[in-house]
Figure 1 (spheres, one colour):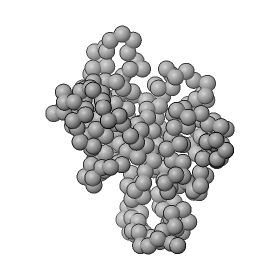
Figure 2 (tube, one colour; figure 1 turned 60 degrees about the vertical axis):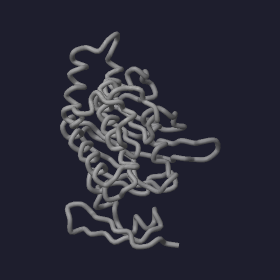
Figure 3 (spheres, rainbow, N blue to C red; figure 1 turned 90 degrees about the vertical axis):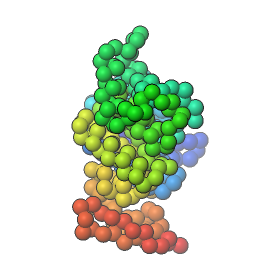
Figure 4 (tube, rainbow, N blue to C red; figure 1 turned 180 degrees about the vertical axis):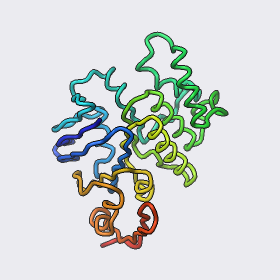
Length: 255
């Protein structure tokens, strides 16, 4: 459903992304990993057309995203940024309903309201539906933003650090929601992730970036190796491969 071809992006005279190429199928989850400043967030913004790539193309179901109208693009791609506004003067229900904006011409239809209500039930937000978004905890806000993105009913969802600033419980809860919704809705997901163990556990594929280029890509067990992590992160690790997913234990920084 998504084909990234030779994607590149420059900021001023610096190359941020170079020759990025990979594909995503419906219902597949890809995690973008790599050190800080390697271009993970920039890559997501280029796919979402928030930033205009300097070269290459983003092809969605055979159509070049560069030639699509914004009104059509938001029906194909849902995007959840890493940071959300500190002031969001809406109830939880209203915040999720915003995800239906691409389909609302004058007022929400019964179908729009049903979609939002079903998502609130599915994501266990019923008790919070009429509360102010600003009054929620970080984990609750992240669930609401995910629900808003799922309300768009897109085939592709882009998530920038969906577990940032969350405690361990909410990290797992949010990742399980992403995985479950991807399976139920057959939604393709691309997300930038810092925690390598979360990426290994919840991803079908990993794309590991180094200096703005793809260092390696593939299944978690093929990408999450001692040598790859040492080369990209300058960290020595031990990897337990006895479990279903690779488990990475950091040992020491490499000078």
